[in-house]
Amino acid sequence: MYLTGFADEAAADLDGQIRATKELGWKNIESRNIDGRNIHDVPDEQFDEVCGKLEDAGISINCFGSAIANWGKNIDEPFGSSLEEARRAIPRMQRLGTKLIRIMSFAVLKDRGPDDQMKEERFRRVGELHKMFTDAGITPVHENCMNYGGMGWSYTLELVENVPGLKLVFDTGNPIFSLDKARPKPYPTQSPWEFYQRVRDHIAYVHIKDGLWDHINGENIGFRFPGEGQGDVRAIVKDLLDNGYDGGISMEPHLAVVVHDASVKSPDEIRFANYVEYGRRFMKLLEDIGHGDKIG
Image (cartoon, rainbow, N blue to C red; front, side):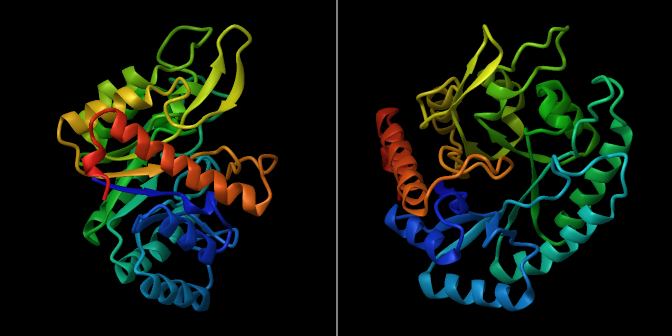
């Protein structure tokens, strides 16, 4: 097992991301944005600088937190942008020795019901992306976020069934704020523990996020430190590690910065301190559940 995180929540620039990672004693970053641009989109000259700084610091990029097929891409629009992102990502990942890339299954069509989501086209596109990456020696992992697979555990399993070999990155916090479209209306929010149990056999990577949802008023109360919300973080991580999980566990705090919500932002020193504190609290959680020996 190793610890990592979306260090762009600590700092916009790579220098700050490296500093936060080193302060935690970690050796990996899940790279999403550098100076506001996704790592597969930064100019070539800047990417050369990124590689040099990482090598000098002894820090690795364990996963590309890509925008491929994410909540900003519609399934009824051309596939080209996601294919181009994949083509740009592959040689960069090979240069960095990165073996994981986060992908999704395109945004939910808001004007259609859960059973009218062009699922066959989604399976085809995700399958094509999966083949591109696996042919290059890279493992794409699908996240249960604001996409088809994120509508509920049954939709994720349907993806896995129709894209043989597809692995998952399970986000502990996303179910808290997501409606379970497999249940009758009015859709309840999902259970992180139930979702995890149903998809556990396909998990290759984990995102740690936690928060609170007001079930009476149907409102997002906000994100919380790991283990302090409704994400069943403690139980999920313990179950994983008790059963021999040996992959990456990545922090995605969303306490000071939310990538898809520009209204959530904090001064530089606060976001840095918040990210580091989040990582430290997660390491304390590992100790509390009897797996502190795995920190290293």
